[in-house]
Length: 200
Image 1 (cartoon, helix red, strand yellow):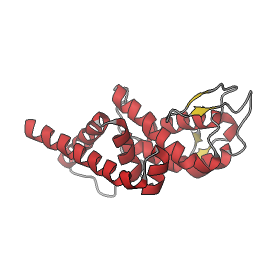
Image 2 (cartoon, one colour):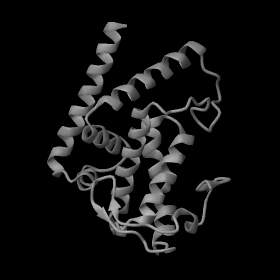
Image 3 (cartoon, helix red, strand yellow):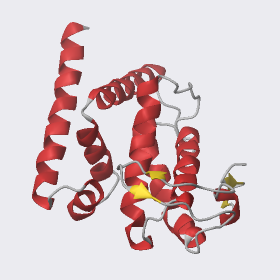
């Protein structure tokens, strides 16, 4: 069942599997299940508050709202089975969304999509401009998929609106190292794009 039905959030009860064991989350932390048939008491509130941000993080990686919503569904299912404190939900969900989207990007399972945006443009763009823009976005995503994982996630989180402090907390980095990590990631992406342009 999709988490989003006709633009509204589904009830939290549909987000949690019947039972959950003990496993590891996207950051490698040990997490315990919510219990047999149990639902986190805060799941509905966290889902309603954080869903747009989770979709936004995934969409920045994948470039597709449909795929981003699929990622969000997977991420909230994992959160529903976790014992992540509610106060740490935003960072945990953002990291999980970035990891899940990067896994999808790197696996080559991304399906083609005809919709770049739900909104219809007021002016129909020139076909050549559309092709060039789409090609550039694909090159950026390909470069992102080749970055070291921590750099890629830091870059996505920072460009998704998380503060340096939030990125640091989410990735267990010192706040001072976030800027350096993001700058290195941006530089690596630029180098990839320059290399691709000069070889093309």
